[in-house]
Length: 423
Image 1 (tube, one colour):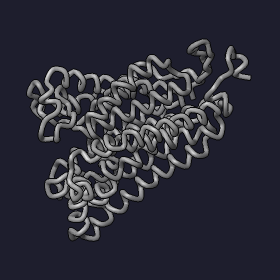
Image 2 (image 1 turned 30 degrees about the vertical axis):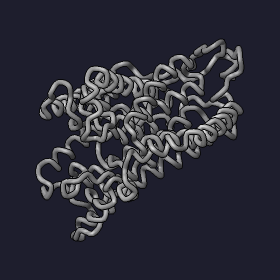
Image 3 (image 1 turned 90 degrees about the horizontal axis):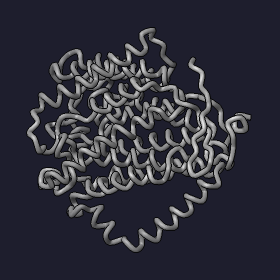
């Protein structure tokens, strides 16, 4: 196991002691390439027409390159044990078994191959899962670049960036991204950056540069799932720190007070933003999702399909998106898949609860809470997706690193030295 040392980062005259991340730049690059692979290849009309075959070549090329880099870095195949990845590997084996009869065509086996390479790369990168923030910064940086491309597309071609087919919601005009994707990326990097600022791992100026534009893009997407996931994730993360951090209690109290007053003043505008001009019937059916869910649940299935599912698909049923992780897993991987996904989520929750309070644990709790809350109206927990990457990042943060005491993990004393903190 690689040893860790502590480094001191000074922000506004205060010394923040944290484990020095042992993540090499090439490992961070491999992580960034995994993110590119999960961007997808379908979405709105782009400024420069991008054939789907080209975008698929980019995403799959990124995945294969990430695997090669990870293998070159970890040629001796030194990996950390991970219950999360172990359960995901069992889910992969179940998916291969369900996809082998080709009921969903050759595409099912191709998706299994993609998931195999995806998980193999994550296993190779576990060598650098050290509880540090190296991969967190790579996560924020990569998604920040993706969101920057969205902002450029909005400036260059507002018509393509906010098309009528999405109801005027912000989409990707440079790379084909849907409004829910953009909302998810914006919510995740905003939450992580706010937590890093709270833990004094970044300055308030750096936080503003990331958070303000990201939240502006989130608002333009009108993505309710991402917004609620962001709020729920931050709420649970701060509550996890409230018992041991006076600063967390103060921030939580101020946020609750200002949020409550702002909610009352802007109630009408918030309601209009939330409804997105939808009728009561459309809103109650979750933009038509409920009808697809009912049809999927009522469809006849064989015993084998109940247990193992029909194999990996494009997360649609009868040509319509399922948009629910649990129903997508039920359809593709059956009750076995549901049990395995519930198992790795429960494992992450239990490990997070048992870890001593720290900024790393708070970031992990934010990511876990976000993914669980988003699973109701978004698919992705059963296949290679950003959600599995968010959870992998959470798992990396929950690895036992250099121990930190309760309050020291959040608010180091002014003028503290590395030697004093280590004592």
